[in-house]
Amino acid sequence: MHNHHRRIFLVILIMLIVRAGAPKYSLTARAQTVEGPSLVLKTASLVTKAGGEFDLDVVIHTDQPSRGAQCELRFDPALVEVTSVKEGSFFSNWAASHGATTIMLPDRPSPDNQNGQVSLIGMAILGGDEGGPTGVGTLLTYHLRAKEGARGKAAFSLENVEVADAGSSGIAQALPNVKRQNAILSIGQGTVPAQPGQSIDLGSGAHLSVLTADEKGAAFLLEWQRFRALLPLGEGKGLPEMGEVQALLIPKNAPEGEQSAAWINALKPRILLGEVPAELEGYSALSTSRYGWIESATDGEQMWVEGEKK
Image 1 (spheres, rainbow, N blue to C red):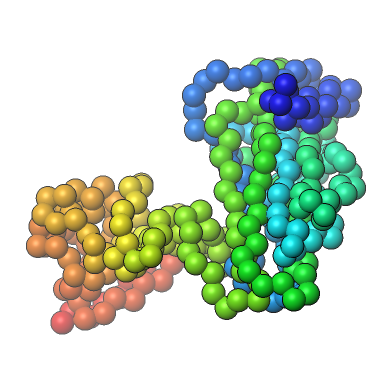
Image 2: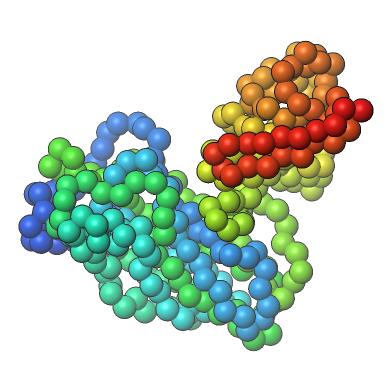
C-alpha cells in the first residue's frame, strides 16, 4: 500500500496528459535493469548565516526522455524553514519549444515547517510533440531561510522519488533505478565536513563533487562538460574506481607496484600531478615529476597544457 501511494502523483499526471490530447499513456512498472536517472539536491553554497535565505534545487540527470517526475523534501525544522516552492526549467523549456505545457501538483505547495517536510510534488509535460527532455536541468527550487540564532548542520533529503519516461511505445513507464543525492548545509559555522555525495556548483556548468571522505582525507572530482579531474587529498582510505579522467592527482595512499599502474591506467589521465610511480615512468602523460610545473586550461571541450622541464 505504501508503494502505491508513492506513485499516486505520477498516475494522476499521466491521466492529465491523456486528457490534454497527447499520445495515450498508462503507467506500468519496467522490468529491465538499466542504469536509471538521478535527482540531486544542490545549493549554491555549503555554508550560510543564521537568518540567511538560500535556494535548494532539485536537479535531474537523465539520458532517457522524460515527461514526469515527483519527490518530497525532508528537513530539520529546528534550523530552517521553507518559504516557497517554484517549478524549474527542465520540463518547461522543452515544453515551450515543442508546443506543450507543464503542470505542477499541487500548484502552490504548502510547506510543513513544524514537522520539517514539503509533501509530494508532481510535475509533468502536457500535450505537444512526442518525446521529452534529456540531460541535466532543474525540476524545482525550494526557497528556504535559516532560522535566527540557528547553528548546526542542516540535512536535506528527498523521499518518494519517481521519474516517468516519455512513453515512446505509447505507454509511459516509471523509470527504474532512480538514484537520489541529498545535501547538507552548515548554518552559522565556517566549515562543513566533506561527505560523499556533496557537490558544489562552481558556475557555468562546472561542479566539484565529493566521491569519498573520512577523517584522514577525501577524493574530489572536478567536472566541466567533457573535462574531469580526480583530486584525492590526504591519506583517506579507499580510492574511487570510475571512468576516464583528463587529470589525476597522485594520492599519498596510492597502491604500490602493478596495482598502482592498473588503477592509473584504467583512468587514462593525460596529466599526472605529483610523484609518478616507477611502474609508470613510460606512461605517455605530462607529470609534475618530469616537469617543474604544469599549467592546464580548458573550455570544457578541449584542454591546453604548458609546462617546463626540471
